[in-house]
Image 1 (cartoon, rainbow, N blue to C red):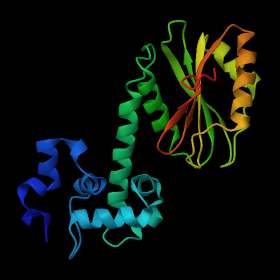
Image 2 (cartoon, helix red, strand yellow; image 1 turned 90 degrees about the vertical axis):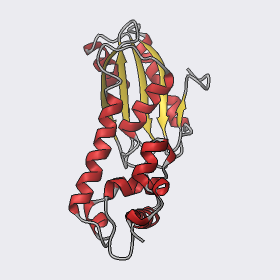
Image 3 (cartoon, rainbow, N blue to C red; image 1 turned 120 degrees about the vertical axis):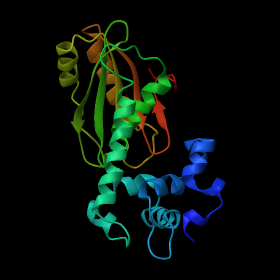
Image 4 (cartoon, rainbow, N blue to C red; image 1 turned 60 degrees about the vertical axis):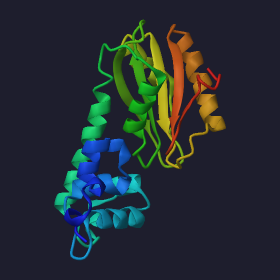
Length: 224
């Protein structure tokens, strides 16, 4: 049955307007973007099929254009549309962390770092450089590795911190496995970086590991 024949309160667009976007399921949100279904299947049916096929919203949004277009009823136009929406979301969160702004909460920082790092299929080590009042100077991705790890060089981190005249740093890296628990290597490199930066009087405020559903904070766990 076409969505147009559904009871009005059950239609995704009307439901969003009446109850807010958080009331919609992943399939309903996706259906709004798809706009139309295919013969015999509504947009919601097609959205559910897509989520089942790819294993969820994240793998769907991160799939290749070829794999996306292999599903009947989809094409490059819808792929481009979804990628544009994903990038808008990233930029929306990034807009909350601009140069000169004060970090207002750990949650805001985690959301921003999660958006920047979670989609990488390999490990990326990044740094938020801050001034003496913990205002943002810039964000940089310094090292990239394979799915198993990234080589992090303390000397390079110190050089970048001095180049930005940073007074404090927040480290972050992703675990492509999705598990946010720190490894022994993560603990070791954090300790080495803290020691190297202490020599030039630069503080390390936190090291955040980005997983699939959670971000692990060294500071919150008392490891800093």
